[in-house]
Length: 122
Image 1 (cartoon, rainbow, N blue to C red):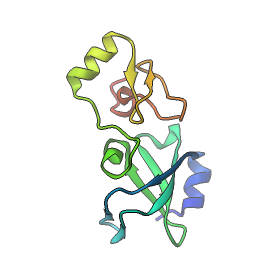
Image 2: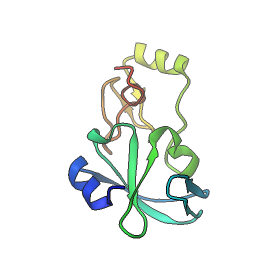
Image 3: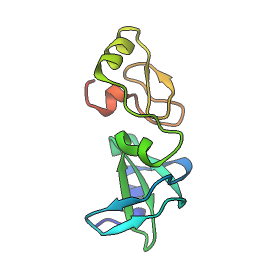
Image 4: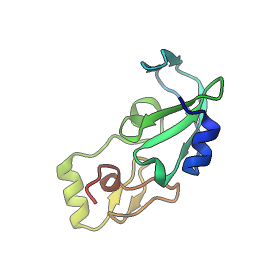
């Protein structure tokens, strides 16, 4: 398991901000659970693909898929249906997981890519 410091260096992680877990989050591989109410700073990098990173104890790197962030944090939106994404792409404006409107191949002001980029559609 890579430490958070190694991930931060290799992936050039940038902070997204502080978020509070609204539900418990269990990590099966390590057996760790982050309880609801815990505050963490989330990090993202274009190299990281479809994941956000954070550190929790012992400097270990934890990741959550962007598609699942809405389950654990306020400020993230559920992934739109493919039909909605098709309609948005036809209008040349799609959303990001944090609700920003961007071009289909664009990134929001917080550095989060459009849903189409996350899904690998473009």
